Image (cartoon, rainbow, N blue to C red):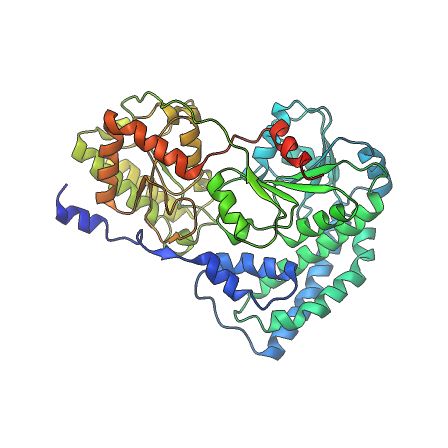
Length: 482
C-alpha cells in the first residue's frame, strides 16, 4: 500500500481521543443529589464536549419548576391511561419467590441478554417487573417484552399505580425543592425536553418506590436481577428494594461506555473484565465484576471476510454529527485493503447494526450505495451470527461484535473511524486500527498463520471476555452479597 493512499484514507477522525468520563465527572462534581447527578451525567455524556452554557439563575429555576409540573402531570396521565399492578395482589404473587426479574417492556438489546438467560434456565412462571414509561396495558406487556414467547408463562407486573404515584407526590415536591438550586447552577444548558424527561423519571421512580413499600412481601426474594438500570426511576426502585433487605443485581448488556453505565445496584455483572475495571472507577455500584469464561480454541478460518458497522446508530454521537460518514469510511478502508491483498469484494459480507432500519433514509441510502459500489454482499438472512468464527478476517467498528467474535475464537480487528472515548476497552485493544494503513498491517498479521494465534491470545487477555449471561453463574455471584 502506498504512502499517499494511506495518508489520504487515514485523514479521518479515528486518532482523536475523547476523555468523556473525566469531562462528565468534572461537569457534575458540584451536583449534590446522587440521582440528579447521575441523570445530568448521563445527559452530559451524550451531549458532547461543548453543550451550550447555562441559562440565567432565574431562568433555570423557572424552567426546572415548570418541568417538574409537566413531568408529574405526564406520569399521572400515562398511568391513568395504561394502569399498573395492584400492590396487594402483587404482594401475594411475589411472596416466597426465589427471585425477581426487572426489565423494560420492550424487545430491545437492553433486555435480550437477561431474557435469554431466563429462557435458557427454563424458569417456570418467572416474575418480571416491567420498567420504564408505561406505553401499553399490563395485560399486553408480555407481547411487547417477549414477542417470541421464549419465557415459560411469565407473570409481568407494573410496579406503579395511580395511587402510589399520588402518594409519592410529597416526596417528589421535596426532591424538586432540594435540587432546584443545583440544577439552576449546572454549568451547561439542559434542554427543556430533557429536563422534563429527567423529572418524569424521578416521579416514576418515587411512585415505584412507594409501590414497593406497599407490595413488598413478608418473605421477599433474596435478590432482583435488572436487565437495565442507571436512571432515576430504576434506581429509586432498587433503593426501595435494598431498604427491605433485598439485593439488586444489574446484568449489564453491551459494552460499558462510562457514565451511561453507572448505577446504584448492589452488584453489576459486566460482559468483560475491561468493562468491570472501567465501572470500578465511577461512583455508584456496590461491587462490579464479570463472570470469566475459558479462552476458546482459535477458529479455523475460511476465505470469507466480514465487515460489521455500527456508527449509523441513533445513540451514537458521530451519527448525529456526520450521518453514516464513519461507516462509509470503514467500507472504503476495507475495500482498499482487500484489493491490496487480492481478496475479491464478493468474498466480503457486510452486516450493519439493526439500527440501520431506524436511521435517516438519506444516510442509510448513502451507506447502502457505498456497499453496492465496492461490491460487498449483504449478510445473508440464513447465515447465523456465529459464522463470525469461521471468517478469515472480521473487521468491526467499536462494538460488542469484538467480544462476541473473541468468544468464537476469532481475533476480530476493531476499525475506528471517529473520535474514541479514551477509557473504553477498545482504546487499548491490540487489534485496533485507526486508519487504512493500520488496518492493512493488522489484516496482514491476522492472515499470517504464524501470528494469528498469538494475536488472538493477546486480544483475549486484554479484554477478558466473560461468559454469556447465565442465570446459575449470576446467582452464585449474587449469593456472595448476603
